[in-house]
Image (cartoon, rainbow, N blue to C red; front, side, top):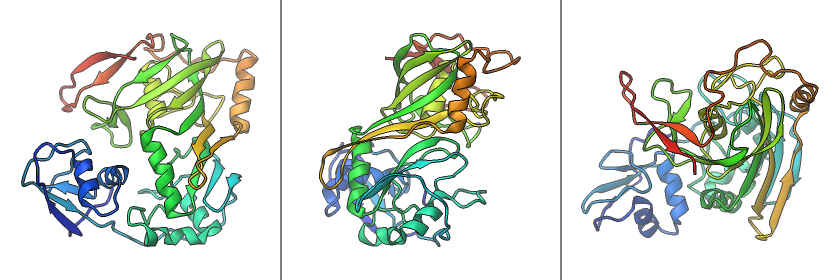
Length: 348
């Protein structure tokens, strides 16, 4: 998130009770409500100096400050082989391998997908010149995948395509399906995990379920069951950081190999999560575009071992809450480190 210093624009709230995103869409020239939300989510809007949510209700006279993005040097272009599933003049979709970080992060030393994008499509580097909403440090990125999550990832090649695809994400009109191998099999076999996700106050590297965090929903369906594991198809309804990993762990069935939210397994050395299918509206023609990418070799090898009767966890004991029913999920309130109040929310 950007750390702004001097605002580019200051506006005074002129009525009580108006949502912040609606106010910005009304007062900023040519701005849509989804663009306003993007500015707010990126930390570029403050109310009397404080960060607030898009749904924040303004009070008459409050000062709304809009800050510019802080542009720094772009990552150096690097020749990294990309498996391109689809490409035209508006967008490209790649099949991302494991062990590739999408964009630079603190402590990251390896070249990222951004470096590969700049090498293959150097014109994307100037996208922010045509659209102030575009993050100049992440040119062309519509969404992201975790470093060790494989599969389909979209890259916009024009500012208008980026806006269209991000709008589809926010409007939840885009269909994104993942394959995941979990520890144990959920009960019921299909359902909707509905629990808000936010940053874990005890460990900023992790996400967790928190009261008053961002609403988060993941649909799942069991495709195949094994001795101590299951293959699930998951549908992202919202798109929060680590969402599928957090939600499946919350119902007692973490993803195989996910050492942050579950347990390691000798059968795969990363989380067994793969973005398999994608259905979008083409940003220029508005026609439906359906794309698929089959799981990589290590994921297929994992499934082969499980189908032959091998145990996912070997001699390890199962997680303590592995048999927790999937019709409930623990939901953590906004905590203090000394006292964390917990209650249970049913999954709709």
